[in-house]
Image (cartoon, rainbow, N blue to C red):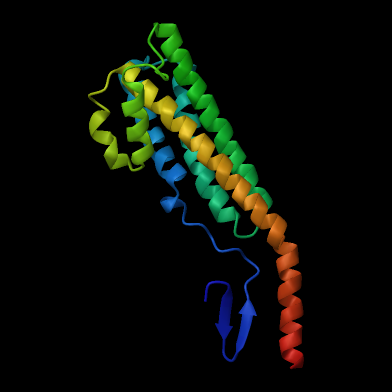
Length: 196
């Protein structure tokens, strides 16, 4: 009964979209990793008091994760709200990435890119692993350069995945319409069944 609710002999179409299981979305799983990684990073490498950047980084990482959850929940009724919240999540992840890039620049550390001896292995690991348990054992072992580069790579992946997912949701909206159209269709179908 995915899109229908059974009541006696009548079948009623649901006007709500099926809710995505956000816990299974790879970009959500990676955002969980980023949230935990950021908490460890600021605890280990940033001032414990008086740093506005610390609060901003922790909040940006949390905001990305929470807006994915809220967007998925609100998306059952409003495609517009889902897309809006995913864009808010993207803004948060881009802000977080900028903070990590600034940290590396201010500290004179290397931002790994194509050609860096460790870049390809890190990229492959981040592509293949989404779950917190795949990363958490490294959080206390990696130095600040390693943690920051993993965070930057994960944030790029999350951003790209959310963009693709938003485009998919937009296409579904164009094909199927929003809640008003679904309500109208459901009402017409209900009336037609009643007449029969």
